[in-house]
Length: 435
Image 1 (cartoon, one colour):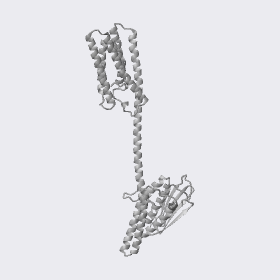
Image 2 (cartoon, helix red, strand yellow):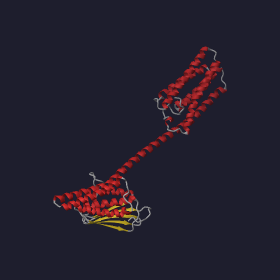
Image 3 (cartoon, rainbow, N blue to C red):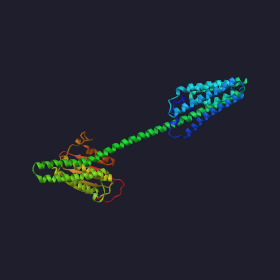
Image 4 (cartoon, rainbow, N blue to C red):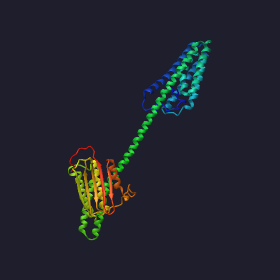
């Protein structure tokens, strides 16, 4: 309760004890608090000793001892209560602070009436009033305490000299200046603590937001990968299985067997892609697993699956320009673009011929999928995935390319086929043959 913090009422501001670490300013505040308590105890003891040495009347002596003990107990009880409150182990003590201070001052005035040696206690009492009361009320209280000390000196000595007036006044002025400095130091410490709390809260909110963004990004990536690998493979298996069922119903066991073999091959390829996906392996490499090699195999597999499903069309692969080594994520995006484009041709275009073209330009790599199918109105293309989960291919492809600074363009006219064009700018990677 005696913590000399410059607040209008005790406990009205956050305690510096809540701060996680002690700064230099907090250390100064702690030293001042300890100094105030020790000073009060020492000055109270000095007053009692002087009273014991000078008092000749037993009643006054017993009264001085009793009141000194009572004042010490009351002061100690207040400091313990405030310490417990600052540590969060006791409720707020603001409403009792003024009453506590009034009791301390009343006991001091009685002791001051008995013996002038208790006037030294006025100095720590100045700080208590500056701490507990508002600025205006505390200045009035300091003035009244100063006047009480001057009056007590006059009463006990029987005369009034200039030092008896100047001494208490200088002490009061010094206490007010120290109180103002303490107020500024305390306010700075509180502001720093609040700033640190706000910074920690901001960091926590930012970390939470980054976590949510990362989770959303990962969900989007997983959806994109599943659509481009597992979903398209399973769609092909469903189409071929229906064709096999139709062949069996027509009694064409040979065609049904061929289509079952196609189903098995497609499932094996899908399983391999699923394993790579689960292991988070790169989809592009060199040698036998090169980008060009994978695109060629994709053309062959798509031709086989489309033929087995009764929607056969011819696919030609073409490479323009010398191959250049590409980052894994660029190669993966090109493969997914080719898968998406050829899957759409097989499912919707009713084409007889398609061309998959990979081009290496001086500043970019391109991939185009041409078909001579039915074509369409571009307004029919979904900008976002549909509620039933379809229409995700182009939206996911745009997201994937956007992460690489690439672009996707589609040109189509009803009855004249469709062209899907992908362009990804080169990075500063070195060049080597990726074929």
